[in-house]
Image (cartoon, rainbow, N blue to C red; front, side, top):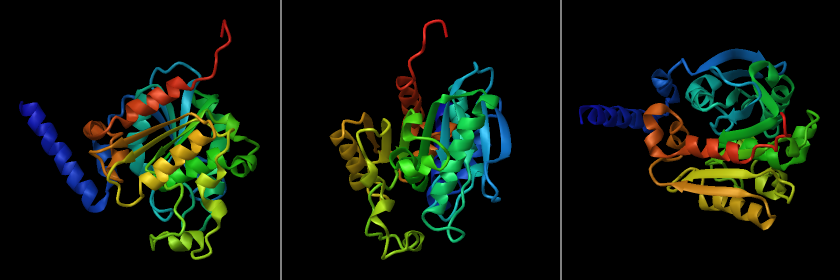
Length: 293
């Protein structure tokens, strides 16, 4: 009972911090360091923001599945260092995690952060074997604005084409509270990023769904007040199904928009089984293995 009470107090305190000022880095203090080997500050481009970290599972077999993660922040804030708990969570379950920074507004507008995201995935496919990952078992994942980035790479072929890839080279994509259909833009912070009121329809992930789109896992907070879950997650899921694309759609009652990604951290996993769902999705979409290999 005492341990349960302490855990409740700790989680309650973290929730208060996260809801108050979103210091996700506080969760890293509760993140163990013995489940992964981290290779930090790898360059995938010429800009100082073109850096990424790789989290490789300890004692992992070679050719592990790989998830490239993009964080949120309205395309105007964020740092991969705040999300070490995501890298640890994935590595602890046998997945090589790649956490990438990308250029932000006002340095770039739409499309600059997508150019960077594509380059990060291209780098991963080319180099990840050196870090225990299998480039044939590659997934992209993102939260909020990062979910948008992941969606655009998976759905609009032009982004990966710039790094000599196709969406079919991605085994699947995972969106957490992602904005996929948000015109006209209402958030004043986001308006200049997408040239409001002249935001291009081509910027919307939902407009790029096709029968060739990779499978998707879409998760959202049921009461998300920042990114409407019915229009975005629900609308994207319906559109994918209309095209015959495999999609798993989940809504959770306990977390909010920000704490949905915080549920990857060990103290807050009781909020929603996001880690279990990601692992199950990856395991369920593995490529067929040739006998003897």
